Image (cartoon, rainbow, N blue to C red):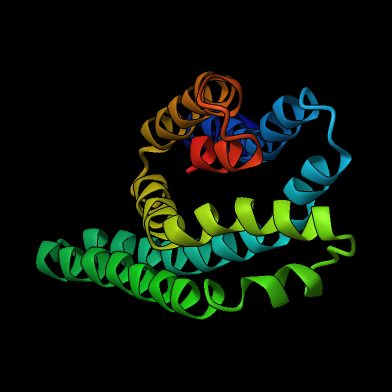
Length: 194
C-alpha cells in the first residue's frame, strides 16, 4: 500500500501541517499589527524576540515529543498508569524549564535583547517591553506546547490543531485590542501572543 494512501497518514498529516503553519502565523500577526504603529523599532522588537520564542518552542517540543512518544508506547502496552506518569512528567518538566528561563531571562533581559541584536535605545526598550511578557509566559507556553504534542502523539492531531488555530484566531482578535485599544503598543502584541 502506498504511504500516501494510508488512512492514518491522511488523518494525521493535514492537521499537523496546519498546526505548523499556525505556529509561524503568530509572529506574522504581531508584526502586521505592530507595523500599523509606524515605528521601525517596535517592528524590530518583534523580530529580535523571535529567537527567544523559538527557544521556548524548541524546549516545549523536546519535552512534548519525548513524552508523547513514550506515552504512545505505554498505550501500546496498555500501561495507562505509566502513560499518565509520563504525561505529567513531560508537562511539569517543561514548566520547570520555563520557570528557569523566566528566572534567568527576566533580570537579564536588557543584556539578552542586545545579544539578540537590538542596537538603538528605542529598539532596546521596545524589545525589553515585548520580551518581558514572553518571558513571564514562558512556563505556560512550554506547557501548552507539551500538551499539544502529547495530543498529537496519541493520534488526536485534529484536536491539537483546533487548540493552535483557536489560539491564533484569539491572537489576531486581541492584537488590535491590546495594541490600539488599551494603548499597550508592542507590549500588547506580546500579551496577545501569550
